Image: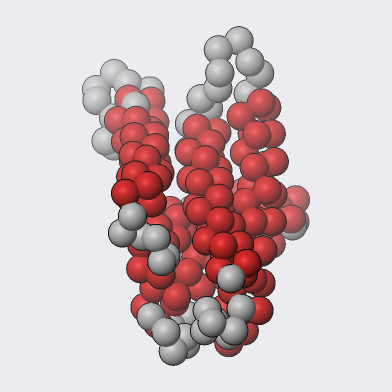
Length: 183
């Protein structure tokens, strides 16, 4: 029973942290920062919360594998859609985890990669985060509860709002899409 609570709690905390990290990543890429704060504040917070999110994701995954009732195997953690229970949604969690692993590895070796390679891999966060949301909605035992739905909606609204603001910023648009006279 303790495993079940730990899986649920670390899953929810992971989702919230992953959402905050995604929002901060968009903010960092957009060069947004708190007023009068140097730009490294947003980047530092993004990096620190990323590490914390990884810790919670690791606890979530390990606890799910160790819990005999969860039905999660090492194979289903490593190979997408190999799970026997809810293979689509567990598989989406695996896809998200695999993409996060790619983000971690490329971030650790960033100085050895070109900026274009690192950025291309880092853009996988735009796939990883919605996969994590879908995983949460499809496997979470509390997914239909009002508090879980509210938390998920807040996460979706936060990323959606930040991403929309980034895409609508005149100077954030590619030159061929920017209005005339915009940089």
